[in-house]
Amino acid sequence: MKIKVLAITAFFLVGCATGRLGTSGAANRLSMEQAEERIDQTEDDCIEETAVRAEAQMSNVVMTVGYLTQLEMGAVFLNRDAAWSQCLANADKGKDAIAARDRTLYENAEALDRKVPLPVLTMSLSP
Image 1: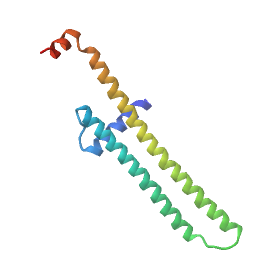
Image 2: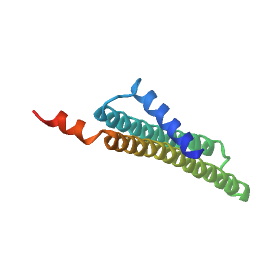
Image 3: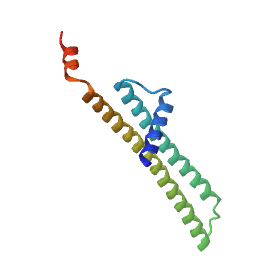
Image 4: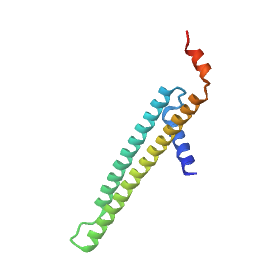
C-alpha cells in the first residue's frame, strides 16, 4: 500500500513538474530530474519560510532576563527545528517516490526486453 502511494505521488510530482509524462527513456529521465529539482526547491523554500517565521516569533518575545523569556525562546527554537525536520522528511518522501518510480520503469523495461522473442529481435537487427 505504501509503495503504491509513493508511486502515485511520484507520478503526480513528475506530471506536475513537466506538464506531461515523457514516453521515451530520455524524456522520463529528464522529467525525473525536473521532479527532483522541484523537490529540492520546495525543500529550500520550506526551510527559508521556517527561518523567517522563527525570526518573526523571536521578535515578538519580550527580551527580559527572566526564566520565562528563556522558555519562550526555547519553544521558538524547538518549533523551528521541528518544522525543519518536517521539511527534510517531506523532501525525502518525494525523493523516495521518485526512486520507486525509477525502479518501476527500469523493471518494466527489463520485463519488456525479456518478452521480445529472440528471432524477432534477430530479424530486426539484421540488414
